[in-house]
Image (cartoon, rainbow, N blue to C red; front, side):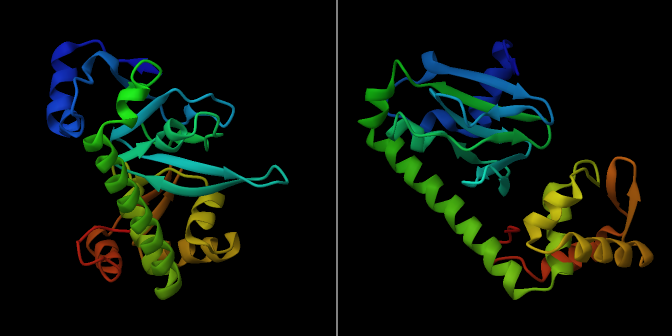
Length: 229
């Protein structure tokens, strides 16, 4: 993790994100801008979380734990996404692990010295409700699309959502889990799309070759707002 110290960069991020507008008091003294490298843990499930995090760039993946100790992928998150709010309301709540899928940048609010003010700030609480609603709707739409459309379309949407410079760099087991299909099914699907020259396997992962066709497949499951769920 690296903390940004350039005041010009910090001001630009705060302006572009409009983050300060969601507070009725001056939140600046409690803010820091952080960057996490790909594969780095942003939140561990053993953390006593004392910060809220607002994703402004990159892709992060959230995991959950089962009683048997198995870890499962819950979802991928892109900007704007908000983390740490449940732990703000419930101080002893165990957080879900959050990992940087790509390089990620966050606006972080250190909460120990402003928790009371945050919990009494109607503007901030409205923002929390709005973000929670948006993230919940996106998650529900994803599950709906996974059952309503062929895995080929969902895989194309996954490629577009999670690609970085045209490459999907992700474990196949996680892709299969994200699409709720078997590993064998995914391998067959990838081989089929490689034969059609839509994608190709490379050492870094999967590279998109035919952007138009991949977009056409993904467009079939776009929601009314035009965002891939």
